[in-house]
Length: 283
Length: 280
Ligand SMILES: [Zn+2]
Image (cartoon, rainbow over all chains, first blue to last red; front, top):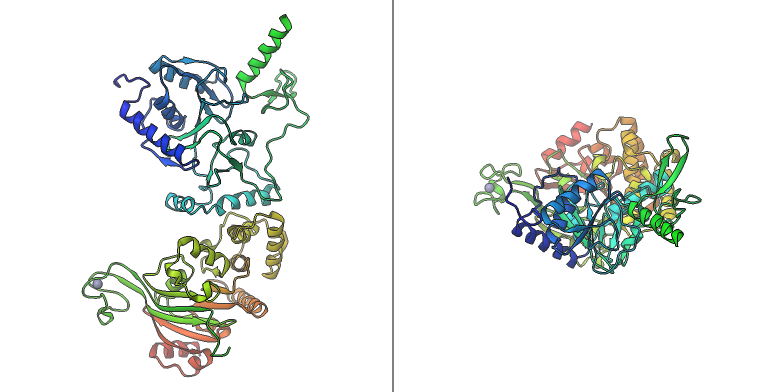
């Protein structure tokens, strides 16, 4: 049995991870290697993000854990339980109340504010990997700011699909220096990274990398001059429950009628909106 | 070409060794056996190679595998580091900077803008699972082009020039024949209109009729653009067809050089004589 530490990890491990986080903050978009620890969840299930969360969480923090926009998915719940069982910190589903938000594949719809930390789980941190398999070489390419490979991949997408086909994980240029994988967030969320007041941290457990976008950092999605970056567009579609249009929508199928409908992907945002409506109605 | 003209490429005392050398072989070429130290197993792949290339000239380098000719090409294209030597291009700082000592970024710039390379193995020169268009665009992207339309237009023009039907421009080279793959490599090499082309055994392994097509294409391109070409081949007949001057390499050294006709008519070194007689 593991000795019981606050937030599971021993203090020296947390210190080391925080040191990597500080370095990442100092060099926005740069992938800092760190000694990834074993956690009682399978690697690839968010251990990178979880290690950052566990290293940063303090007794007064209020945590929120989301998985693909949902606070209540099995993954989100089990990660949240692990954090709470070892820390006793409070949790919330409300983005505005949370101090630490661990997430997979989404940036919340509710705009973040100063002092908040968003921690993203990263499966594949290297934006050049699909054009360069060697880690030694990609490190060199980053050092030399040689991003031809990332541009080539975009060009190839345009050749094959007529547009940038990066459904998610569309590469971004951070602070005019490093090209970074924003993790598989939809392109819809990319613009939220730019000049965001919150600190955004990215943790890859299996690949042992941490990187960061500090508050108010310039983040630009890669795009050719004559093929401007585009978010997913939901033209003429809106959330069936809220009528919202300017949010990321899930496409669902009504099992009874077989009809396609759309629903706000961010579950807490959806709930807050519905409750706000109810509150207004009862007055 | 006139003798007063300045070469556009100069290579001086180029050496490439694999291994650290030892007291037996270091600085003592007489103790090396065919470019190899039997004591410490250091390979002297290229030894004291000096050569120059003039504007619009085709120089053929002939030798068997292991003669160091491909090692030489890789160093000239910065695929591998030189052990020692000097490398000057007239188009880069008026030929006053030794490119072997330049920064990796500068070497990349030279590679993209001043040189075009065609490898024997297309997997070295192409991304086999990216479209032909993307392979050509790679050089333009590396040169800073961020306009898709202009790159596609240029890619189309080049594909036409190397006789690849435009209907196949979105196909990846993995679906192409060997001859077509070499033609895509040639189109890619030409993408930024570099003054110098490096061709490493470009027709080796192709069927004879395909070889002839590719060689003719190279000839045509060179006549239209007046590129300078360094062409490496183990096949003297390829060199005979294309090269103005011929350099013969054996065990990492240049053993003979001269105008191609001269070398063919009156070979001096026994190895060259053997090559020439086998051609007859
Ligand atoms: Zn030796």
